[in-house]
Length: 151
Image (cartoon, rainbow, N blue to C red; front, top):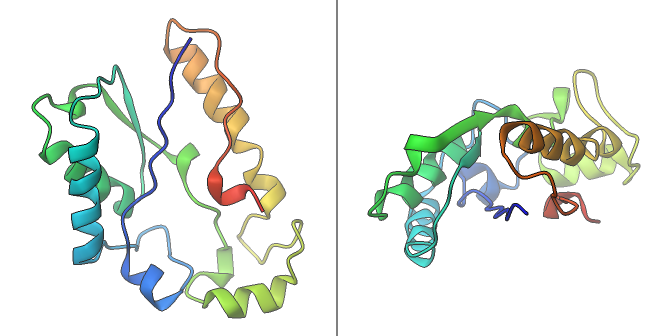
């Protein structure tokens, strides 16, 4: 059986301003960088065969902070994937959380042009586990959920 550890990125400037981050944005704050290093300290004695990291800047920065305090180098077996991205809000990128929630009225099927709805995002865990099954010798993977999706 495969063991999965899912780690959220450190604090970003968009988190502070409560703004929907763009895929090319999301730079970590100083606190976010410290959070990544602290996470690395907590995981220092854990062993990982493979590491999958979202291709977004904020997750890359978080991974670099985690990896910076380890004695091994997680980059040796690290892969970037767009399957671990956050929900894409399309034309809502750059809006505040409140503005977006007012538009969406919490409808799980709501999406603006070029965006995803929550039901689109809910399909990703299956795609992630299918990818993991194909890329590892392990065939049993427990159901994978994104904390962000559970509402």
